[in-house]
Amino acid sequence: MGGNRSGRGDGGAGTARGGSPVNAPRQYVLLACGCLIALTLLVTSNLQSSLGLKALDEVLGQSARLDHVDRLQMLMVDAETGVRGYLLSGEAVYLEPYEKAAAQLPEAIAQIRRDMASRPAEHDRVEGLASLVGAKLDAMAEAVARRTMEGLQRDDLVGKILMDEARNQLADLRGLINQDIARSIEVSTGGFQLTRAIGIMLALGSLALLLALFAVMRRQNLLRGRLAELLRTENARLEAQVAARTTELSQLARYLTVAREAEKESLARELHDELGALLTAAKLDAGWMRRKLPPELREQWHERIERLLHTLSSGIALKRRLIDDLRPPLLKDLGLIEALRALCEDFAMDREIRVSCELPEAADDIDEEHALAIFRIVQEAFTNVRRYARAGSVGLHVGREDGLVRIEVRDDGIGFDPTQLASDRHGLAGMRHRVQTYAGRFEIDSSPGRGTRIVAELPLA
Amino acid sequence: MRGVTAAANSPLRILLVEDSDLLLGVIGEMIDEIDGVELSGAAQGETAALAQLNGTKVDLAIVDLELAEGSGLGLLRQLRSDPGRFGGSRVVVFSNHAHAAIQRQCRALGAEAFFDKSEGVEALIDFVEDAAREAAAGSR
Image 1 (tube, rainbow over the protein chains, first blue to last red):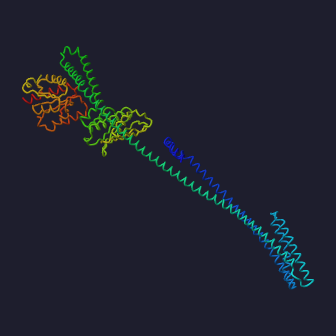
Image 2 (spheres, one colour):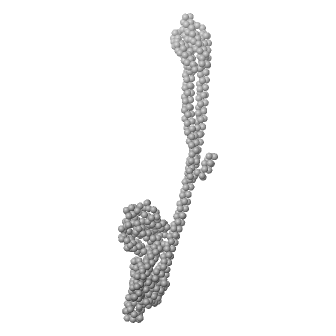
Image 3 (cartoon, rainbow over the protein chains, first blue to last red):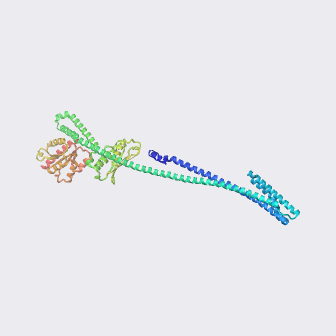
């Protein structure tokens, strides 16, 4: 829990690094635990199966030993039964099982010796049994011989005692082996219980591990979800901020454009009303003087008067140019369409350029501000063509498309690479800004040697 | 001048429409000097000019395009839309707006001639003198 809390505490400072580095150590620990559990499972299951096999071997060996003990006893009983039958009846037929059993007894004893060789402590007991069996065999052989030679005999007391003793010994041996079997089973049962306990522990460990993993993943998912949500809201906030700023800037740019145009307009008016009137009045008076000059003075003053008139004309021309630069000369008087047509005519007259001009029928619904912007864009585009394009022909197309005006100016001049151009050259930046001011779209399509096409779309709203 | 005697009978009545006081004076004097011409009035805006044209008989209106109120083109439009009301005066434009498109527009709106203020003074005087002679000949 402590790790969890500190991890979460770090989250604030480490947000940039993401959630996973915080959880990485915990994940490694979980992985290590998982590996450890799997390895332990492997080892214990291996151990358990080998232990089981060993125990099975032991039990099998001990039950074989029991069989051997039983076999010895059975052989002895067979031999004694045969001997007793012969002793009672004298029939030789009873001797056959006796002889058969007697022949097999040494091997049975040897087998038991081999069986018990691993237990030196029981060596004496085995040897005692062997000599007991030997004595019993001897006794039986003697009894058989006596019967053959001397006829019917009394009870074979010695044989019975020996047999009972052998029975006892064999029972002891059996008990001994049974004890061994019980011990083996006990040992392997203990082993099984241990592995069972280990198995339970491992299973519980795995379960805990799974739960921990699930918790970690869940936490990570939650964290990821929260981060994504955070990112989303942050993005939305930033986008809204950018949109707001853009609107603000656009409004500012629009305000500045309008203010600048208004200033220019006022300056132009001043130039026209005051300076224009002064120059024109002077020129008119100078002209009057030239007309009214007495003939005798006319010759003498001719040069000065002509120069004065010329100077005044130059002044008027300069004033006119200044005014035309400050405000579109025709826009107010003629309206946008005629002003644009006049612009095209001027352009065609000015230069040896073929100018084609496609304009809409009417533009009465376009307000003064937008009309001025459209006029300025075309004017700037023409200025560019004049200055840089070296074009043979230029085409102006102004079209109306629902709610916006589309201006296209194309020329067949030398073109340029728009990606290489300093943003400021060619007055393109000015055009772009003007279009952006009115939330429009501006597009330049040009490449060296392929002419230039400029498209500006201006929403009228 | 030839029209002196005729002019005394019925001078050409001229209305000068010009927004600058200075130019109004200079041009007024210039026009006034021409024989057979009477400067019957002056106006600095479109509405004032229309009022004068409506109230008094004017033979020739000399109109500047840029006015203190309204515009010369507006005046031309008004005259064209209702010629009877304004006595069917002849109109010429005397302006700095030398652009061909403007000149065309003026002619389309009924202006007989277009004179550049800076270069066309002599032509205007010639035109007025001719008009004065024609008026005198007509009234004879």
